[in-house]
Image (cartoon, rainbow, N blue to C red):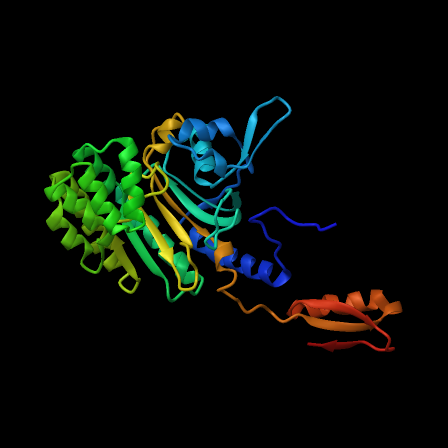
Length: 366
């Protein structure tokens, strides 16, 4: 009989667990330094909470089961919704802002893998109750988090979900075509994108704007995109990003930050900035977040919010932290009490492992 674990899950060995705990420690120290307090929420949420909150929930991505009352439950897919629920219900009479952080496992069924897993440990923050003027705080906290882990080769990409959403609204793109258009832009499928726009009758500045989005990244992305905006509302979004860019140049002049207007959000609750961080050798973002000003309204409390999460499991193969060496105390098996007393003294200077042996003496070895 072959005993296996479910698809997308993994066992972690001691060295990996040690590395993960060190990452958690460093990350939570950054969060606390910004005034964020750690919270825990149940691993299980009502499936109806997801249904009532998200416009187009991907049911196949949730782990679902029933309780003894026939209610459908689901393992949490992230920590944003549980913390938003907490602020909308149990803290409903408490004045915002709320600064919460977390280090929790989250679960999502993935049909295809690109280095992704179904269970990951997510560490992040949620700043709830402050508007987009607080975006620099969330972004600088994210950058400090990357640097606290010793990541030197990261790239930090910032976009804005309003660029695509407002362009679609101004151009009269319906919901079905918007989904197709978002996918083509996200995949940077330039030929198919051009054909689709032509087929749907989009021409001139509108067509040119959408065709430029997949390539609207790099050093001059904001200045170049401003030139091709076909409406003042789009120019206003560019202006907001330019203000954020100037703020971040003052706050984090050495950070590797770029802007990407072709960044289309995969979660429809984003309402402003969206951002991701990448490091070489990992085929998916290790950190992601953004602004979600309408999510809590669907839970019964209208508060703006912004946050991010960093996935520790994607970093395990890349980041190794030096741990204190564990010495071994070799001792005769019949002298266990004496060995424990001796080890107690030794542990004042670091970890000690007791190892019985066949000699009539005690000896400490590295």
